[in-house]
Length: 394
Image (cartoon, rainbow, N blue to C red; front, side):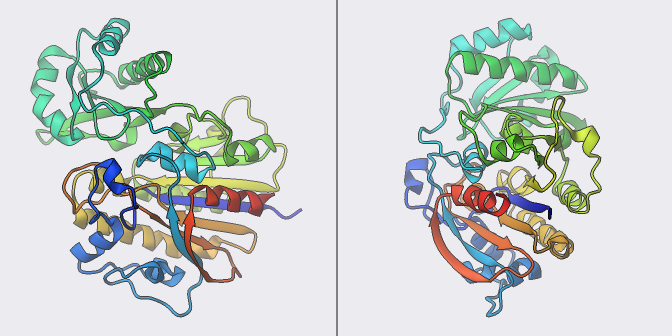
């Protein structure tokens, strides 16, 4: 029997305009990550995305409209109450979050921090405020070295972030502390989306975060997603990048972390060429009994983590162009039995005030060899992707 594959590539935070309820999330109506990045860079060189039809969705400077698109293209409006990675990815996989995750604009409650300090035996913590990660480690690095206390901070998102210099505190200790924080948050019903390990080192005299060693400890999805459906059928679900963290490994059969978009894209190409070391990547106890279907799910985080949150519109533009270069190699690997989906999970406009995510619509592109190109218009729900994947594979 012919093998069918669905491939989802999430360009993390590449939103395309403020949703109607943007003000409820503290965002300006001017947020439009892709449009503003294009304008800032006086246009982007993205011939593959252009050919797929992304320029037909809106007017993006430097991205032409095409009368002969090779893909189906449209706009998605999120149903879930959130603008974060977890909410966006869960909805892409078919799970709507009716209740928003908790945020901590005044820092975490004293009783939670006290339990964390007691159970980790870390001696104390620094910060406990909403902050930009790069700024807070620069500000508190000296005190961190004096006390050896972890830097604990949050943002406008539902995140409990722990930063340490791993030349001072071992990486394994940081991960252990994150797992303790995850358990305490769950036991206390704090409804917090993610605990994030933020390791850094002093490089050329400056505290520098080490992306490849970052780990996210998410709440487990409360219901099954399309990933679980595929896994339960005995087929492969391959998570590339932070996918396994976002889903707390639920619904995944094989996974590999990445240190950059470049690595994530190269691994996606290897997956399409059946060149991944799947035995090394397979979770213990997983048995693949049906090789007629497969899902490859890739998150490309650099746009968000390195450029969106750091208000670096130039770097954001270059990252999109890099993705486009790899799409040139990916598209010829997509056969009539494969469905490629390129989308995003929220916004993070580097050109507007603030360093947090933005509540935005996202683009969606569907490509398969021989697909009928068309304008899909506006669709309510990122979960329309899960339905399309399920229909394709089953």
